[in-house]
Image (cartoon, rainbow, N blue to C red; front, side, top):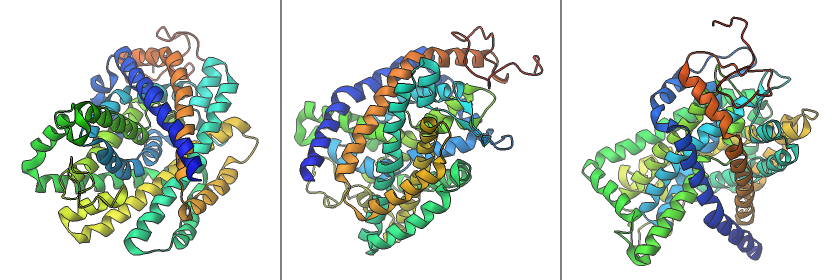
Length: 481
């Protein structure tokens, strides 16, 4: 098993280091330029749209609920455990590269979410279905590649990532309170089944309040720690920038420090915010909006919340604690800790032992919300493969609950490394697709900027590159509305 884990790990390292990270960054830069820097130019509208996007018709999912589903899947172990791992492996400079990845990734997230809206279809239960598998088939005319993408995503989000989130919960409870993983497994199975067997509508109802609340509480704790260490704010920023460019190189040397910071920051940032990987568009497509661009902006904002706010919160808590000392890896007070336990120890170091149970609860909610958010992604892609001929909720419900049980009691190094490979596979397919289809998103953006409050119509739209294959974005009953 160790040899297999190492084999998968080597493949994953090669793909991410030499192919995926560069492609994701270059794509993000390209989309930023082509969109006129939509993530900066329209940032205020992104914020406004989130708070005015709760309306929906009967049977549909609101734009805010779709945002919450995406946030639920994004915000998880990557924000707490992943940041801690990035700091240990890449130094404080890793945070800077996480920011860079997020800021250019917002444009990528905008494009893929807008495409998901443009090429979505109405499902038999009144909801919408869409995402990379759908826009690959309907936009590029290739159901085969859409199927390949769907398989990659189902394995990653329907099995492997459910297992890893469950494992994080079980490990945290075991290390903090000596709760047997078997007990955690049984409880998680029950809690997961109660939600996932209700389908995507129930997931939307749960995540629309759970995800924002947990993010706000976590950021509040970070702000308290920042205020306690107010005099360290500027030095902390200085440390991050100095480390990012090798001015505080440590044992690795200048070149080694820059490379370590860049690779670890970029990789953990991409894992956390998912921009360009093709996962969040599955949630974005389920929303009912008057214009595809509105959901694109909302999902771009999700990247901002995930990395710039939540991941930065973790980084500042670690950098202002005594548990992590840059440049002295192996001698840190928390050197025997890693991932989530290191973050818990860092917060307790600042606020006292009383905060540890609160942090544990937050981690549990982060991971649990990711479990149900991941399920929603997988459900959309099972529907794509089966064309609605099987009950995806029941099939995936069984798979998800079994995965959660196995994940709670297992060592997951092999599965995690293999999941990284499948995630890379779906990301590569998605990036090629959105690069080829990006002109549709840019056309929709030009239409939106011309008249932001006007409902979108694709028929004879002068900004679109052609006639969109859809029965959703059609002529309005009142042409002047």
